[in-house]
Image 1: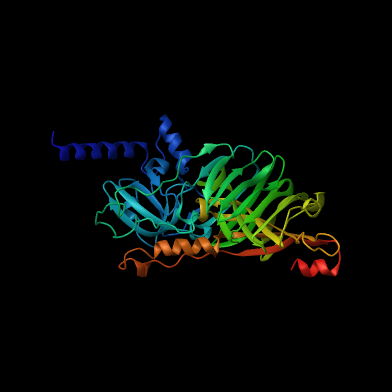
Image 2 (image 1 turned 60 degrees about the vertical axis):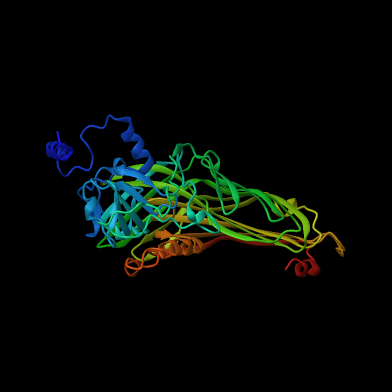
Length: 486
């Protein structure tokens, strides 16, 4: 049989099977192949909108779910999908691809490579996907996470190597890269909440959710050495949410996470003929709790983290060390109804271990260190930087300053500052440094495509903020220490 005729008969047979199983179904009638489950776990469940939800008109539902995905680049921008998947040929720049609960985004570029399509996506607001619908659930357990490491995304490096999976548009075929191999792809997920990654020169070990969510970090470069752990502690948490969207507008949004929350930090840093630095980055790991389909939309509860470390070592040699632990709140969350909004934080601040009292070191000059740990809880769609939905983010800032051990007039001066801030809303938020990296990558698209690609925004949707706790302490409480530590 000639190859062309064989393909024609095969296509006809597939068409008959689709007709027999229901042409409007997004899932096959029989799901016995283990690889189907693996694809769903790795790339997310397929949508199957039901009565009660209306999608925006430019959303393209691509059939097959995770089975239609070949791979995803580590930066999350490029999805390699089966060109024969239902509705895949309807994708074009400006439309929204919706292939799985983790594969949702605004199409920025599309190219063909063999039997695959390389689809470059950017973030979308949840209201750019859903026009009408009410989504709610109580008692979502947060005890059995699926951990998604990004691998080696371009936004995890100080000097990213731009992926070259972009370029000419369909139907021109081209290699997926300027070089000879594919870009780094996301590794498979794993059960449990512990995984190690490397980002911006830091080794980071993420953990969730036995006693909380946190990150252990280590840095050793350029004469500066740092090691520490930051944790948002809790016990047996669960979540509840409510999101109502009408005519593309959020009319009600509520998110509440219980578990008895606290904050904990320990660190040790030193400098030896090195240079100070400041690093701000997302930890390239998603900790996800699949919720399942809510009126046909596959939602997940996702925990993500960000880290900022800034050194202010005032000499060429010295060390600083400290640790502290505090209870913070019984519940975290917020509510927005009919134009009224506010945090729902049952504050229970109590010192368990004083960071100030633990602060020690051997400073030749003033030793200063700032660590900021952000934990974001999101109920929504998509993955990594582009997760959109209802979110509550808690950022804890720890500042520690140790005065010089040489010539202290009364005693060695020590100072700490602790601040806890909440940001909450509906949509997505991306760190500004990361947005710059992404937009730099997108600017490398060929000039013929560039006019159709708007820059990625750092945030979308309504959002609010509130201070949860703030305090500064200096000992000994004398004027000279106040001036010396500034």
